Amino acid sequence: MYYYKVEGQLCCSLEKDLPYEKAEKPEKITSLIYLFDREPGSCRASFRVNDPAMLFAESENVSWLSSVKLAEAAEGKEVDETIREVIREGKMRAVNMRHPQFAEIVKEKQEGGKKRVNVLAIGDVGSTLLTGLHLLGGDVISSIGICDISDKVTARWEFEENQIAYPWDYDALPEVDIVKPEDLFKCDVFVFVASKGIPPVGSGVKDVRMYQFENNSKIVAQYARQARAEHFKGLFAVVSDPVDPLAKTAWLESNKNENGVLDHQGLRPEQVHGFGLGVMNARAAYYAKRDERFKQFLTEGRSFGPHGQDLVVADSIENYNDELSKELTELTVTANLHMRAIGFKPFIAPAYSSGAISLVLMMRGAWHCGSVFLGGVYMGVKNRYTTSGLETEVLPLPEKLYERIVLAEDNLKKIV
Image 1: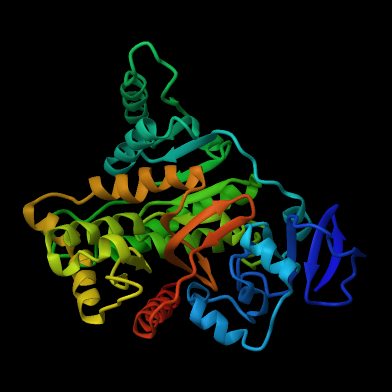
Image 2 (image 1 turned 45 degrees about the horizontal axis):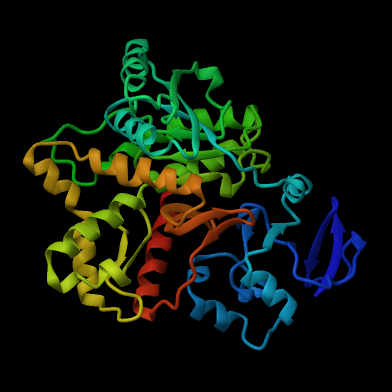
């Protein structure tokens, strides 16, 4: 390993003669930035390294979720104990040298404290999510801004939400205020809940999420371009359906110049986050509580992939049963159809499980379910934001489970 000083930060790399000031190997364990060189847009610009094998990976993809695949790719390659210890202690952040914002990324520090959150569109999902954030987020949210095309809607919800309070502790919950469209990105977390419309109950549309993509992608593109124009440095959270393709659309559109050419001067891949997996994970747990065959999911299970048909539910990682896992996945994917058959739109559980709860966990730096950039697609995984960057969980995935995740990745690539 070779050491350098870049923008005042101690860095390391497997490359010997980088054009930076040479530095000595640290005598004690300290924070390090690992420098790598990869095509912008093919990977995250920055992330937390939680497995030494990541340092040897030639490309970023869903194999990064599997300790087995990472180990196979790095066979015969080792790092010294110092580097291993830095990684074990969560003090290594990787940064792509080829990204146009490289110098800025190296210098940035993770800011603590409460976050300002702005929510766009206060319809059924938006208003429910807003209430969840307001009630649950007092420890991490300083205030919440709301924006909608209807002034009456925002006036109603500002009035209602600010009358929810604990007696004699009137500042325990974050204040809610109305923001204009031009001020939407004066925040730390922007939450996109806008949607042109959901097919009415009884319409016969089976995959409602993909039905929404054509219209909602145009809306998210508009705000992604605004984020670029305003040099937004916070998190762009996508809650509208279909979450995963919309997250990628937001990232892509923010990185196009006035001629429509990708220049990677907009939102970095890890600045966009999709919030749709939370409710799928919760739905799997719902069925696992009600059927003894699936109970292992509650302690050993995981969910991966998009908020839709290519969802992957694993009943267990250590004792994976492919047949049971696929059955549980099917129940989970079709749960929304069950609600629509009853005669209601299934928006309350998604607004809380995928939206409010997952957003609050994310702001706390806690593990949660969400879609993050992974080699060109936004893939739902267990992840968290740390002082060393975005971290995704690495597990010893069984081969049959891994193959299902690869299939989900391939199908996501076909959408956008």
